[in-house]
Every structure is written in structure tokens, then in C-alpha cells.
Amino acid sequence: MMELTGTCPECETKLSISALTVGETFTCPECLLTLRINAVDNGVLELEMVQKQLRDWGQ
Image 1: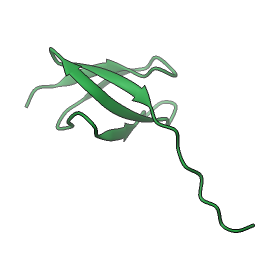
Image 2: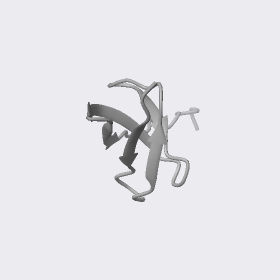
Image 3: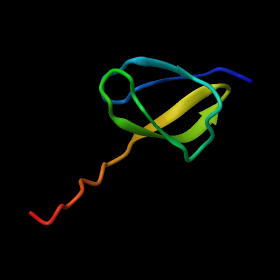
């Protein structure tokens, strides 16, 4: 399995992951932002921040 690398667009942490594909999401271990993989180019991830939906508990 090829190791994929990328940089968090929010905190600029260098990321190294494996076994994820385009369209999948994961959490940055540093800033805890949810990121989506938009593309992979020669093992380099193109990442986008995902807007988290907050739960409405009816309060």
C-alpha cells in the first residue's frame, strides 16, 4: 500500500496516511478539523476542509 502525504489546510500539519480514497474524510490529528480527500496526485493528497454539521438538540 502506498503511503499518501498531504498538509492540513488549516494548521499546516504534515499528514501521512494510507488506505484512504478520493471522497473519504478523516480528522487532522493536530487541529481536529475534518478533511475530505478531493484528489491524489503522485501520492500527494489534495485536501479540503469539511463544514461540520452541529447537532440540534432542540434547545
